[in-house]
Length: 312
Image 1 (cartoon, rainbow, N blue to C red):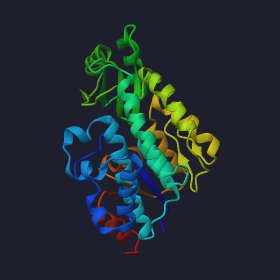
Image 2 (tube, helix red, strand yellow):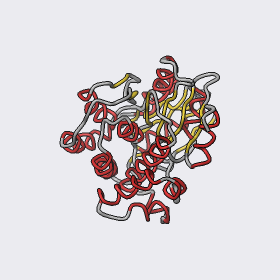
Image 3 (tube, rainbow, N blue to C red):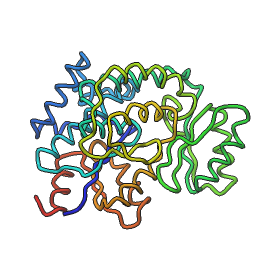
Image 4 (spheres, rainbow, N blue to C red):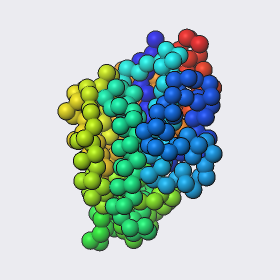
């Protein structure tokens, strides 16, 4: 039997209708959506399934929506006997990982991430910040071009998604200067991203401070399976490691390349992307040669995963 990792997507994976097939096919998945509605005090399920897209894309809605769709997908996996040996999530997805590992209560987590989304949106005035994907150059080159393009403004690495796909974030003008520099220094394609705020950079420090009180007010337990952390690629096995890592994560780079390499080094040979989208499945293949990944965003993906293990 392969050693399974569950990986969970972050903001940007949201689409109207995500999770509906699991909601309709799986009672445990349906209960997750109902729990989210109760915890938030409004009909999140209707927003997720019917939109409008513009409302779903608001950060304070996106974060609980993606968390709910991901945890519902994991519930459907569990119903069919799929259990991970280790979990990790990209940015917001780390909360999904912690819920599925048993470290966070889902109802508490869905309320926290709604506030997290609002805090992150509020941290920087609209249009003041930006993010860009820098393609085709390695991390040291990106770090240097950030230093050269900053010119006194905030600019830094936000996501290390794969060795040659690195996202930067900071003040808009600084990000725009970095995109130009990247082209001059060998970048294949560098583009501004359609995001509402510059996540995972120093401009998010006020959001982290506001989030502290929310995280300190909820129950955190030791995870039932190891959770690989975004901030350093290390592994959380104790309750007292989790809150600090989530607070650091808000204004620190997501070191996804390190997370995937750590799981592979620890023996993972099948990466299941649980929740909306297929982004992480593509990244796994770019990070680890020969790695096998399957996206489980609907029951068809779940059947494919089960078939690949010979347990369908």
